[in-house]
Length: 388
Image (cartoon, rainbow, N blue to C red):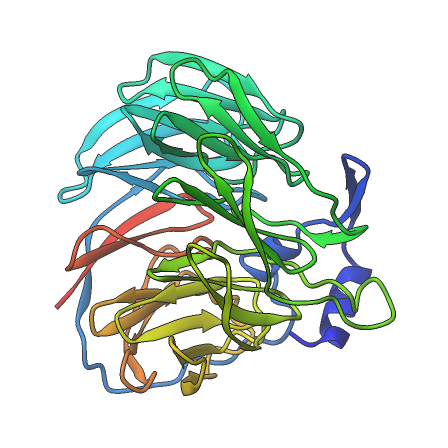
């Protein structure tokens, strides 16, 4: 979406304050699940070249204004709805392996690892449970928890709505470290958290910065500039990273709204390449290409070593397209009407389309294995889909 569309959208959006920072409320949610900010493109007829089918489906309760990322832990996938019901499904069959209630409303999707399941609340709490549902501990953060906590090497990493990142002890939730940085006056609300990889924590921030932290201590390893704010007004100068970075050793890549997509050396933070692309939805990567859904809802394939354009699929304009999932010979995205679209990895052409429950697919699709992936809708539908 261009600046004019963004301004028109913001004019009708409520503003709220988090830790002294004025934030554009529900920008992410209304682009990916509320009413479209522009007239959505009609779905085109095409000859399918793939045959997706629903392997199993379930419902965990509606998302309301939140975006929930399901979590795969071994052969169990966990999903949650706003009311707080957490369900673990066997990834292959959909059989319920665990079901329990968090006891309060949930604002951040599920994280899992080290034998525990984690969720976040609007009150700024991180709740930890055993995989069967026994409550273990809760930790208080400085703001609403909108993103799934991540677990690695004895540390739970969770992000508060005010941008602070916390390192918590996996055993009892006690604070080990906290990372805080100044943020611009105006920023986009986001449900993206952090990526943890080989002892590093990677997170994007308002103002177009990508930061790498040391997992044990929270100290800064490096900071990279994905995009610099441009323009004369606060709206024009919004250049936020609102999606998760992607790791593709030896590089890490991120994309900013009203900014660029850029890749950096994973260890040193040296800038490798960048090009102008504006995105709120996010990225995916495979052995050859980097894929990004831009703010006009076009899906782009870029050469991951240089950023050169490979193809562009722009026939889903205005359809609230999710972040892409690189999945074998296809790129998978969801839209605001609950359709799952499979695009050819080679040229971006439509390979298949599958309907779910009619409500938006806001979170990125999640790969379950080499032949199946999962989507969660805002209506609470959980769909495991296999492709033949």
